Amino acid sequence: IGGNKGGVVALVEGLKGFVPFSQVSSKSTAEELLDKELPLKFVEVDEEQGRLVLSNRKAMADSQAQLGIGSVVLGTVESLKPYGAFIDIGGINGLLHVSQISHDRVADISTVLQPGDTLKVMILSHDRERGRVSLSTKKLEPTPGDMIRNPKLVFEKADEMAQIFRQRIAQAEAMARADMLRFQPESGLTLSSEGILGPLSSDTPSEGSGEGQTTDE
Image (cartoon, rainbow, N blue to C red; front, side, top):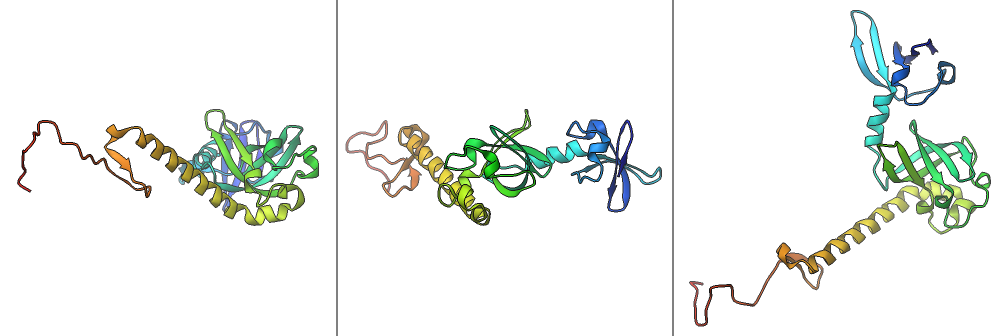
C-alpha cells in the first residue's frame, strides 16, 4: 500500500507491516509493487512498539521447498520469449520452454499462450541454488497436440495426467531397482518370477557342513 527508500508497507489482515527491499525476492521498485499481492512471512512482531517486519524472501524459500518434481501447480503467464514462456507460480518464476508446451511443434508461442493466461503446469525440475524452475504442459496432454487444439481439456485433465506420469516414473524406478538386485546377490535379496523381493535362497550347503552332517530340525 506504500513505500519508501528502504522498502514497502504491506497490509496484512488489517495490520500494516514493513517489508525491507533486502527481503523482497524480485528487484522491484516500490512503485512496481504497489497494489500487488506478495507471499510474506513474519520476521519480527513487537506489539508494544507496534512493529511488524515481514519477509517475501523467506516466504518464497518455504514455497520453493515444497515444490515437488511431477507436481501440478496453477500458474499465470507473465511474459513470452522466442524460447518459451515465463510463468508465475505463486510468486516464483518458472520457465515453460517452447519444447515443453506440446508434443506437436509450436512455431509461435503467442498462438498458444498470452500474458495473463491461467494454466496448470507440471514441475519438471527445480534448481534451488539458482532459483530456476522448469515447467511442462506437454506432459499433461491427454493426446499429443492438445495444448494447441484444446487447452481447456489439458487444464481439466492435468491432475489426472500427472498422476499417470508419476505412476510410470515409480514403476520405472522399481524396475531399475529390481534389475540392480538381480546382479547384486550380496544384497541378501532376490527377485522371484512373480516380481516379489525376498531373502536370497540357496540349495548349496553352507561352509563347514559336510556330507552326512545332520541338524536338529
